[in-house]
Length: 367
Figure 1: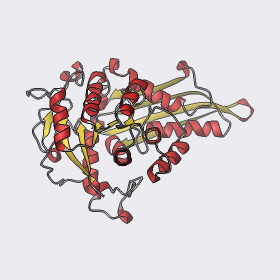
Figure 2: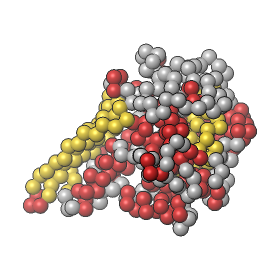
Figure 3: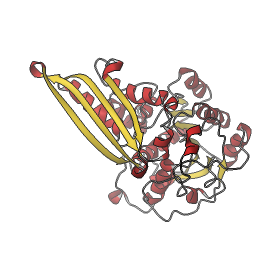
Figure 4: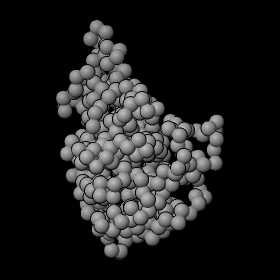
C-alpha cells in the first residue's frame, strides 16, 4: 500500500503522542503491538502514516523539524519513543485567530503558549503548502474554543481538496451546512471531538448503557475532569467551553432511553492542576433506582494519560479517512465518526458504531 500523507494543525501533546506512536509501531510486529484497535486497517499499517506538513503558532515549535517540535514546551505528555527520526518537514507558522485565549499569557512559559514573532500564513499560503506537500488528510488539533480557527482550516481543507479530521469540539462534520460542502466536493470528513480509547466519555456511556440494559432508572449523573496540560489550562476560560460541554453531554445523553434534565446531568472539565501534566483524572457518579424502587449509585475514578489515549483513536481515524479517499467517498463518514467522535453527525450505540465501522473498513458499508 502507498503511504498516507498527513498534515497537522497544532503540534501539541495529542500529535506528539500520535507521531511518537507511529514511529514506535514501525519497529513492532502484530504479535507485540500493544494498544492498537487495528494493526492492519484496510491494508494500511500504523507505520504507513507519514507527516508532510505541520502548522503551529508557538515560538518553540515554528521552524523546527516536526520530530523535534513534538518534544518542545509546553508539551508534557509521557515519552513513547525518545529517538524519533527527523522528517525533513519544518513546522510552519499558522493562523492564530481565536486559537490563543487571552488568559494564557498569565501563566509560566513552560505551561502555556508562547506566540512566535513570525508572519501568520493566510489561507492561500496554507492551501498552497497542503497541495505542494501532497497532503491527503488534514488533522485539526486546535485548542477548545477555537471556533474561528477551526472553520478557517476547514475552509483550507475544502480548497486544497484534502480529507479533514476534526478532533476538536467545533461542529463541522455534524453541521449540515458544512457537511454538504464536503459532500459536494467529494472530500471525506470525520468529526467532531475525538473520543479516547478508554476515556471518561466512553466509560460514562458504557455505565449509562448498563443501567438502561439492566432496568435501573438513571436519575442523576456527573463527570468531573482535572488535568495539567495546555488543554485544561485553556479551558479555565469558561467562555470557550460551550461546544465542549454540549459535545460531552450529548455523547452520554445519546445512550439513555430518555435524556436527563439539565439539572440532573453535569459533564465537563473542573480545574487545572499543573503537576498532573498530561495525566487526566475523571470522577464519574451515576445515581439510580433498581428493583423495588431501591436507590443505588456508582462512583468511579479514572486516571489516564490524556494524549496517548487520544492517539489510539486518531491512528484509526486517519486510516479510515484514507480508505474513503481511495474509494472516492466524500462527505461525513457516519460510521467512523460515530465510533471515534463524541459529537458525530449521527449517534449510534457503541456496539452499533463498532459494527458499522468494521463494515466500513471491510467495504461492506459505504460510510
